Amino acid sequence: MHEMDLYDHTETVNELLARYGVKFGIYKNNTFKEQLFPFDAIPRIIPKEEFDKLEKGLKQRVMALNLFLKDIYGEKRIIRDKVVPEEFIYASSGYLTQCEGICPVKGIYSHISGIDLVQGKDGEWYILEDNLRVPSGASYPMIARELCRRSSPRTFQEYHLEDNRNYADLLRHTMDYVNVEGHTVILTPGRYNAAYFEHSYLAERTGAHLVNASALRVEDDKLYFISASGKKERVGAVYRRISDEYMDPIAFNEESLIGIPHIFDVYRKGNVALLNGIGNGIADDKGIYYFVPRMIRYYLDEEPILQNAPTYLPFYEEDMAYVLEHFDSLVLKDVAEAGGYGVVFGSSMTKEEKENFIALLKREPRRFIAQEVIDFMDLDIMDKGEIVPRKADLRAFVLMAEEPMVWKSGLTRFSRNPDSFIVNSSQGGGFKDTWVLSQ
Image (cartoon, rainbow, N blue to C red):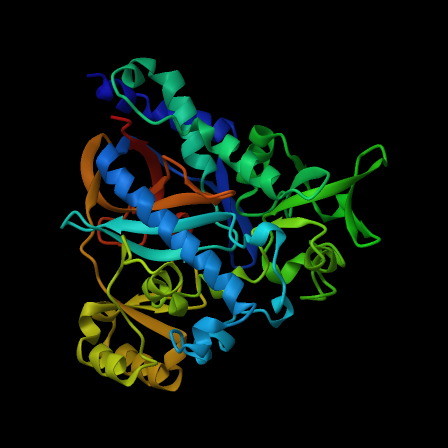
């Protein structure tokens, strides 16, 4: 076996990642800083039978979430039938009244879904959250696999792995499927966005134009791409890497300088496909997450294949009572936060912090969810020449065209802090490749 050959190339791979500009950006104290996303060469290995179950469960979940989005901006049957309380819809910052009555091209809302999971020490996989707005991270395992193959080809001759280099083909097919007519573009806020490397890498790999707002223009309810030579050509699909509120200064945040005026009108009339759809934030609200198993039963008449982490809603009196009684053993999450922010562990608070937090919880019960702390599986990483265990999660990517397609790879993120469960890159985590065995 030549695994150690791959491990010996860890430093080389990280040097190549740095040379290729594989970085992410974060803002601290109003200053933009770029930093490397540290790569660990010990792969996460998922057996074929195990991934087959994950694949079925992920397809099921994303289908239900897409049906929920279509329903919630349409007939709202799920509210009428009291499956989800209306307070959880209209009080969500992700719900956009502007999207009422809009059905995007071919009825697809979430074309690219990033579903975050952890594997418990009991072997079961639990879904931690759904990301249906602008999920990022696929580019990192794509390029890492490519560099690892180049650095240690012998390693990959000994394993029967699913080839993760097909992500660009899946993405291109997804974009082409909803393209109404014209070019496909990837819309980036620009060089100083946290995930700019990914925007440019995916554009290169899919053959889509990488553009910012200045290259796009709305005329006669259609969207056009203005080339460097001044030529105007129709755009049929936009893979947007810009948040909802900045997409159109006319429809949303009027101070946005990175959006396209009137693009929302074009979208509403079905003259351009936006990947992902606007208004998806309601479906990945952490409060709505609680109801996804109910959505699967309601829309698909199936039992959920994959389970949520055990979750409580302080909105409900009985759940509030449980949370107060078991406060020290729970993790509490602000439903409007992301990237590992707004997450607090009851056991880590001082008496005063606990009293203040509980007072806030009682004032704003809709703002938080509480979850059992899953003792999730450690994965080995190399740390200063030694193999040590660290907490890790998996972001799985599900793309939707004629049917949902699960990428047979994923982004495995790990905490570099031995005492931390937070794995996000913005919180100092690293990443590793995810090997899905093909037999």
